[in-house]
Length: 410
Ligand SMILES: *Cc1c(COP(=O)(O)O)cnc(C)c1O
Image 1: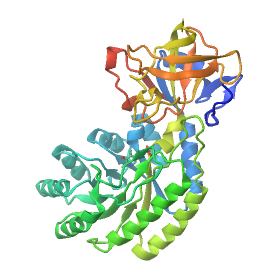
Image 2 (image 1 turned 60 degrees about the horizontal axis):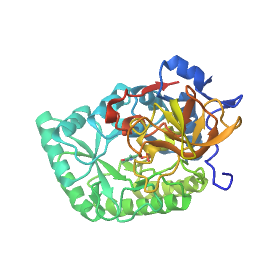
Image 3 (image 1 turned 180 degrees about the horizontal axis):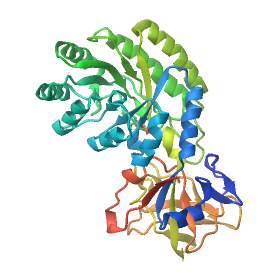
């Protein structure tokens, strides 16, 4: 076992007497408080600390937006809203949660392909910024704005002519359903200028879950250069330049925490240059998982323990129906284990190699494949770390009809 690369250090939560503590209490106490397993718990202080540390690292004057699709639990969004400079939403449901948090419409933007007329009407009526994904979307937004008597506030989401290398998810370069191809943007900018719409700026998001500073720097450089080129055709000042984010977190064995030092240094240089070239523009980074993923855990309970031909299985009441990503079925090419621990035996105790599986009748329902864990028996709690993003809302709760997990912010 010791030959295998281990997970990134679990520094985000205290371990007291070898028991994981989340939100200031042991996971077992927390489970008693919640009332039943499985559940997701999000630690508010861990989220606040992450935002604070990030702001200390990033150059002054860079706005931080929270992309709430990573974790749209209303209590989480309410907690995050005053800590960040704005919220990015991807549906009308998320827009309602964002508005409920008290965030001003001027600080909310809405990206995502396939905005129907209902979404466009909701966004225009609310006065938030639409990150346009196509010329067709723009024309429908203008028509809707006319019926409402409100000028739509629009930014153009650009599908850049480069990609963010080494990303968990590539969102740019080549044909993409996201954004308007960079080469088509000048024409759309002219069309916006000829309409009554309020032009806000550009949104250039090239990818997600990146742990390599040099790739992020390369993409940021290319993003600013592209923005300068497109600004020549802009119908007015670029008020906002959303440069995406893509900051990753370590999930899998061997991955290291992203060091943002060089990324921030580069961003500082670029920011000054950007102001010199484009004037008083708000530069925004939009982050989802980087802000919340490490602050969350998923807790499930061992319901059976069995041996099968030399392998010990811990069968739990949690699984892919609650946490698709931890099962390896949310975009991973090769399944790798999330960090998983036995709640009361994080590092010590008798250790054993086990597979942690869920209750579903499918071989895909794996939370930990042949991992070394503190020994656990029926009734013990198993914790999946790095679970504060793309967990609860990114999982097929209805599959097999077991109860949905609970969520708490602690
Ligand atoms: C999903 C998404 C994000 C958030 O991505 P993370 O990897 O969670 O940081 C940001 N911006 C856009 C446009 C997105 O679609």
